[in-house]
Length: 362
Image (cartoon, rainbow, N blue to C red; front, side):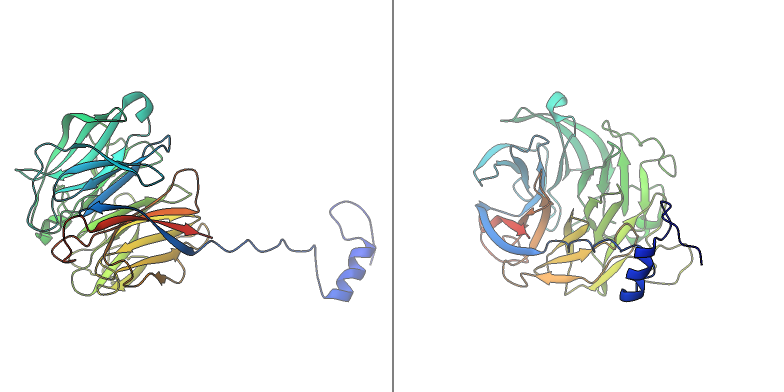
């Protein structure tokens, strides 16, 4: 065998080292550091009633928080100081899960001052745009209506994607057939322009981005710009899904994993007693999922850049009651904000019993 010191080929020293250590090539890179896990919780603010949506301003100075049943919107600083900045007009409850739900701050808020909300009104569920000057909400404008409402299954989450378009999760309004009806806005993930029109490139040329959803309430984008979604099952399985344009996620034909042709299976399932998920957030390539009936925070690692997830681990089981919304803090992947939902019929606690918690990851 001819030995050489030419760059890219094995040297005599390398061969000798390999013979002594059993190595057959260059040393492998060190394994990546393990992802952080929740380590501590700090109460940030109290005196809230069913805080549903939570969205940070792009400048990180504070977040906006919605209350489902009384339609108030609060400004909450990183230190936990809260100030009411307004209410959302024409809002109604449904005696169940409807009311003032999701909120999303436009990525260009610094120039437009636009904030988007999803709420229940007289004729159904709506998405509306408002302006927020840092102190007060105003200039209420409906950008989409005609989403059917019901006592339950209203969906409600809003999120801006890395593509700049607005994504909205809608429930089946307790009419399962709507989830499979491409002409219906219900039981869908919608993808919209900032005026409420169908976003360019949508799979059917309409506002519908994906279908076959029962009651989706969690939306979050990973480091590759992929959309993950969590939704309530009926009586058997809750789901974590990776959303792709035009895909059909099965409801009501499928609940959880199934083998029906044309249906897209979830990446993870739980029994409804373990989860009943609402909001999700993604930090350090890990999905965090807030559970209502399950009264816990689930941690689900994404397997690198694949479409698979690893073992799910539960935190704070029963400690803080029903958990509704989880978001990352701006500028860091080491903190989450987590809201409780105990001041409702299922939680049984009085008005003002809910709070925001800060979770530290390390």
